[in-house]
Length: 323
Length: 81
Image (cartoon, rainbow over the protein chains, first blue to last red):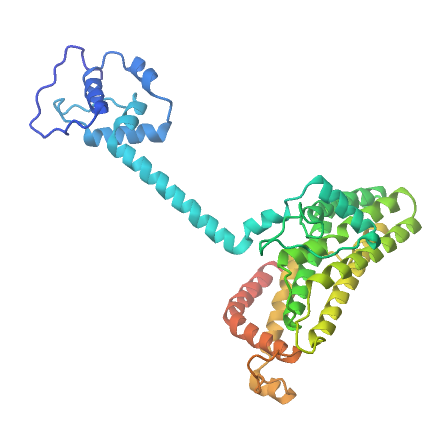
C-alpha cells in the first residue's frame, strides 16, 4: 500500500498537535515522505524488536494527525523513529524505568529480610592469606595464641582483616570437596552410583541443619548472651568438612588405620579449635558476683558443640570408608 | 543413614506435633510445668521457664499452620505412600 510520491495530503478538520520540538518537525516531514522507507529505517532504527514495533505502530496510530484522508499509514517499517520522537513514548519509557527501579528495591528489601545478603557477602570476603592461615589453624591450633575477634565498631568483621572471624568460604568449599572425595572413595570400593552423590549431599546437609537447629535451640533455652549469628554457627559446624576430606583422602591413599589416625587427629584439633573460639564468643552474663550462672551453662554449651563435631565427623565418614 | 531432606521435614513436623499436643491444664499443670507464676522482672529466667516459654509459643504460633501441614501430609501419604 504505497502512497504515490506526488500525493498531497489535504488539510484536516481535526486539531493538530502543537509543534513541541524539533523532533516533531522531523516527524511531520517524515510523515509526508514515503519514497524510500527502507533507507529511513536504516538511518534511525536500532532494531527494537517486535514489541516496540507494535508499540510504535500503536502510538503512531493514536497520535498521527489524521491528515491523510483516513488512510492508515504503514508504520510497521519504521519502529525506531516513532519510539524516539513520540513524547508519550518517552514518558512511558521513563515511567517504566522508575517502576523497574522501585520493583528492584522492593525485591531487594524482601530478600534482605530472609537472606541478609549484605551480611552474607561479608562471610565470603576472604583472601588467600586468610584461607591459608585458617587452614593452618584448623590443622594445628595449639600454637595460636590470640583467639579474640576484634570487632570494628559494631559492624561485622570481614575475615580478610581478622584471622579469628568465621567465614563461609572454607566450609562451602570443604563441603563440595568432601562430596567429590566421597564419590571417589565409593568408586574405589565399587559402590558408586550417581545417586550416591546426591544421597551423601543431602545427608550431610541434613546433619548440618540439625546441628544448626539444635545449637540455636540450646542457645535460646540456656539463655546465653552471645554475638553468634546463625551464619556463624553454620560456619563453625562446617569446618569439620575439612578434616573429613583430608582423612578420607588419607584413608583411600594409604590404609584404614591411617584413616583412623588422621580422623582422630582432626577430631582433637577441631574440638580444641572450637572450644577456644567459642569460649570467647559465648560470653556469660556479667553480674556483680562475677561468677554468674551463665559461666557454667556457656561452658556446657561450648563443650557440647565441640564434642558433637567429632561424633558427626566419624558418623559421616565411617559410612563411606568402611563398607 | 541416608537421611534426605524430606525425612528431616517429616521429623520436624512430628516433633512440632508432639509439642503442640501438650495440653496446658490437663497435663502440664499436673506435672508441674504450668506457665511460671512467680516471674520477676529483670530476673534472669531459668532453663525451665525458657523451655516452658518455648512450648507455649510453639503451641500458639504453630497450631493453625500445623493443621494445614498435617492435612497436606496425610493426603500426600495417602496418594504416594
